[in-house]
Image 1 (cartoon, rainbow, N blue to C red):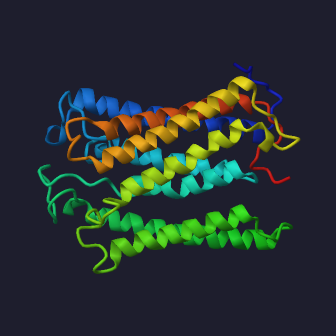
Image 2: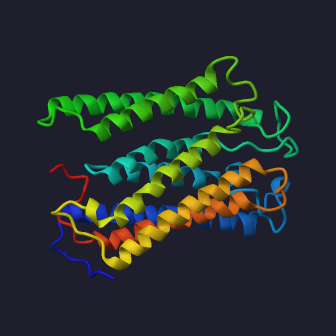
Amino acid sequence: MAVVDDSATTTQRTHRYLRLSLVLVVAALLVGVLVETVVVSWQPLTLGWNLLPSISHYFYTPARDVFVGALIAASVALLALSGRDRATTLLDISAVFAPLIAIVPTGIGDDSGLTCPAPGDCLPAEYLDGVRTGVATYAIIVVAAVIASAIIRARSDRRRSTRGTLVVSVIAVVTALLVAALTFVPGLNEGFPFNLWPVPSIHFAVTLLFFGTFAAVPLLRARESLAEEDEPRPTDRQRTVYRWIGRLLVADLVLLAIALVFAQVLADVPLVLIGEAAALILFAWFWWVQTFERWDDPDPPSIAP
């Protein structure tokens, strides 16, 4: 492990702490789920041994504050680590989806004891107003952030937007408007919108998009040829770790997709819970390794060259 250098610049320290914070955010989320599972035990949704069908279902338990707070914090940290290369552009895109995982909860069955406006998995009526407020706030902030970014860039020396910036801005605005439309437009939000096929929930879709986008980051980092000449390159061991993290994340996303398609058949097996926990651990593992890979990096990627 690297020794802390008191001569490190403020920027270096900031990047170190941001990366470590992403590890701690995952730890906080998993600890919150564990405490809720072992200590509190919310019975209506349990599968046995106090396990819920997925980590996302803990939104409906007292662990909700930890769940929502961790995802919002992760989104802010990912945006703060954004920058000039392809990998950090992907982090920006991941940050677009992260808040929606927290704002729009997963659907639950009509046997949960809550008010289900439609048969099958749904968003309980008790949570509709909160979700609509969250989605509206998200959409407004996304559009405002894109406009502010464009104004700042126009007033700076770097007037021309990079391709990555344009891609992130378009994805952010389209995502915000699409989710807002599904939430508020009559006819599109019947059953809100968990009965839409082939995507049974916005929550599940943005979860797959978040981890799917992020999965490309360790794979890119594993390719030494993509590193800039003046950037530190990962060691052979680090590249191997990144390669395995990327591959395992892809395999895990396939597992989650299978769990979705065969949800009825595999109802007694908490595949989604296992898949989400594995994805979070892999996410944290990447940031732990990269924290010390870039510990002494004098020019973090978020600094414009």
